[in-house]
Amino acid sequence: MNSRIGVALVVVFILLLQSCIVSRTERPKLTGYVVDSDSHKPVVGCKVGDVYTDTVGYYQLKEKRYTEFAFPGMEAPPLNIYEIVTKRDYVNDTIMVFSPYGGGSGKGAHLNIDTIFLKKRVQLKKYNH
Image 1 (spheres, helix red, strand yellow):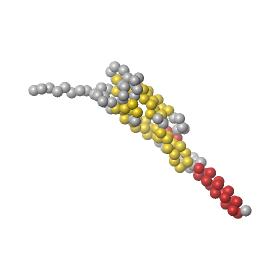
Image 2: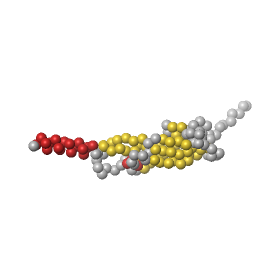
Image 3: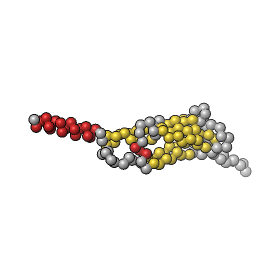
């Protein structure tokens, strides 16, 4: 009889521990457009994080998640997004988002960044003396 109680307690303990493993958001899915700040035309082939914009300047970064051990009632971790936007002949830009409890977002989290306006890099002219 004592061995059955011991086995039951171990099973309950394992189930409780398993419920403490939670999925967290490292980065929600990010979507938006990159356009030239002067002409408002799409910037094709612009690198946003680890993807490139398409023919209409659209990008989509996939959601990233991780698991962690957390006791019930613990606060969700902060979400700190930092993605570089770069294209030759343009000034780099950065997507920066901070949310104090955003890491607790459920699976399928999506953030529309909307439109990023990139400025052309000023070309310095060389003068011959």
